[in-house]
Image (cartoon, rainbow, N blue to C red; front, top):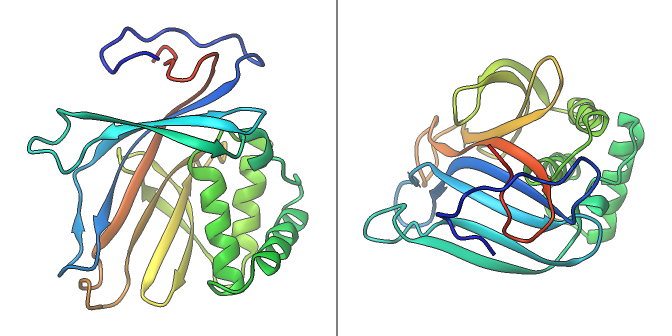
Length: 225
């Protein structure tokens, strides 16, 4: 596997390669010990199997190091669901949403029915290589969930403006942000909408931006930026 200082190598031609590579930047808040504290924005790289279940790889800074960003942290991810399974979804938004509702019933109670479907859409989008038609279907499916709002002019973690679908449950609002023209997923933003024990309204809980998606041949290989 290549190290964090190795020269990036170009990915294989489109349609070849056994791993999906996702590079993003983001920060999430630490909760549970006083007011929520947003961690430093950091870069994250993940490699996941493309077609068959197997090992993946995660690299991101070791955030509790004395100097953030100096010590790289690599973690092998075992028994990872392949990208092909994750994005094997209906292209019709109504059929896609019905599938997510069915799967929530099979998993058992947790979040509200609508909240679980909205969360599932974010989980699919966050770290996967999604065909454009599927990304658009996920946006339209999310917009059909009761209580979800469409918000324009939302910015991701690197300042790109897009259109978001937003869902509020309890005191938290989550926004999945898309390019307004292509409906390509850009990132997410989460924050409190009312005062809580973990912080006042407006406290940011998470902000991310997906910077690069590619197909590569080997675990740990980086495409050309």
